[in-house]
Amino acid sequence: MAVEKVRTTAYTHTEADHCRYGYCSALGTKLQHGKINSAAADWSRWPAGTKLRIKATGEIFIIDDYGFALAGTNTIDLYKPTRSKMREWGVRRVTIEILEWGDPWKSYLYIARIKGYRHIKRMMQEMEHFYPDHRAKMCPVVGS
Image (cartoon, rainbow, N blue to C red; front, side, top):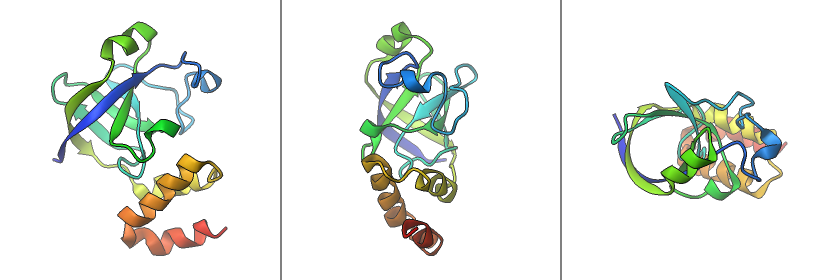
């Protein structure tokens, strides 16, 4: 099991930059809070579908979202259902355990459909670099 120390922040669906998406993640699924919680991250570091546990709290999160400010960072943004819970979390440096890795190839194909944004391009370029074994599959998508 992979263990990492990472910076975490928190977000909620009522923040101004998330309001247009409502309760939806980047994958189009409902943001989760409960036994498993939604989280946003740079998909080149933690591909969509990656499940992790925060050691200190035992909370389990699944990466199903991303954000402009997360591309190129070692930060995971944790979904909280209310602004007060979001503020209560603040910014914390925590140790996480990776329970299951998401698929970088599926993540790449998903974001390739919307590659016009700078943060999406950055994630795609880093995926091509971090996962060279997938490069042969990825390159045809990049040129389309």
